[in-house]
Amino acid sequence: MALVTEESLPLVEPVPIEDELCSGLALIEDVAGIAARFVLYHTQTLYEVGSTVFVVKKKIILPYAVIPFGLKMTAEFMARRAGSGRMLQLVPPQ
Image: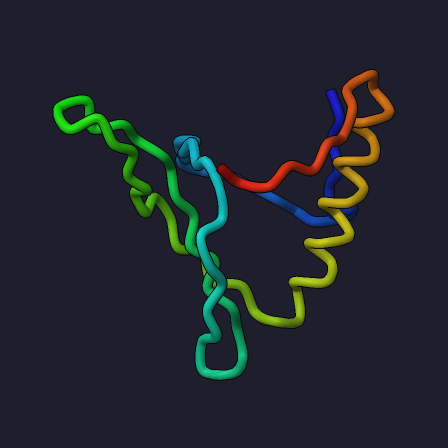
């Protein structure tokens, strides 16, 4: 399993936090010029009408200063994942 962590970060989780499945990133908003709000969604099918809706699942606010490091961690994770036999493939959202 590919794992990338911030070294020397004393991360604790005193109360278990549940995972939340999201399908994608819907938008990024500026927050007072000092942070960005990432709005994550999950697709759901309304079987009664036969259409798909995009339900907002999470809004995460990150200070601008930490975003470049997050991008670096993401790139390292995807590179390790691709190196583990899985191909990294960028596809447009449908």
